[in-house]
Image 1 (spheres, rainbow, N blue to C red):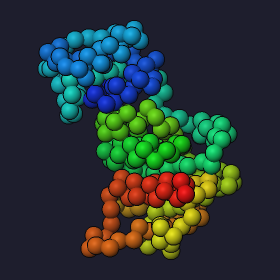
Image 2 (image 1 turned 45 degrees about the vertical axis):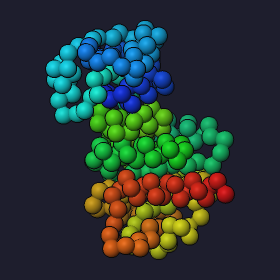
Image 3 (image 1 turned 30 degrees about the vertical axis):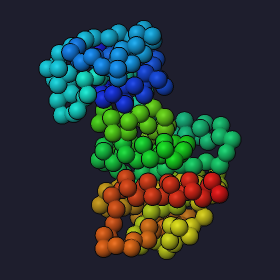
Image 4 (image 1 turned 135 degrees about the horizontal axis):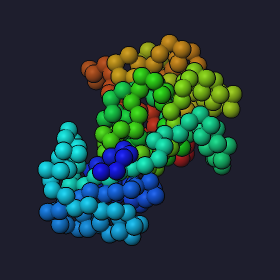
Length: 247
């Protein structure tokens, strides 16, 4: 078995084969599964000269004991996330107003995966998160993201407050999500250089993060539910921004 991070699930492995095949050193497939989707994975791996191992379901279960691997796994090499300097290079290379998502300490891999997927669907240029006390690009994140982890640059920063300050200096409008925010999300202008800032599960945005935001916006709630899961709220914010940016 080769060293590296193992990703699993048809969507995650197919996305890696399509978008970043050079990062894959080995693909494991269940030898008894024979269908069109699995054949597509095999064909892609062979075309990129990636080693393929046909193994038993028991071996795959041992490799990913707590996950639905869908009969396929792949070993991924290389750096898992970008750094502060990568973010600045990305911003310097944009030819349109930046559209960023910032997660302030999200720890559930399912939430990060779902946020990556929404960010990819909404056309965000990058997802930024702190390096400490937050989840990174784990195999579960990649599987839930269904390929979005290979599309949206994921930037981990050592000092989120410093990054927020840098973004403000670049003229990027920081809109934080807060249930007690002053502005209704649907009345906030989200059309220019923008970073949507979402808080962690349960506790929301940290005090210092709130202070760096230009405005705190709330999602208007018509029913009896008082709050939304962070990944759901992220989708609402991102797609409201997308709607406005298309007008």
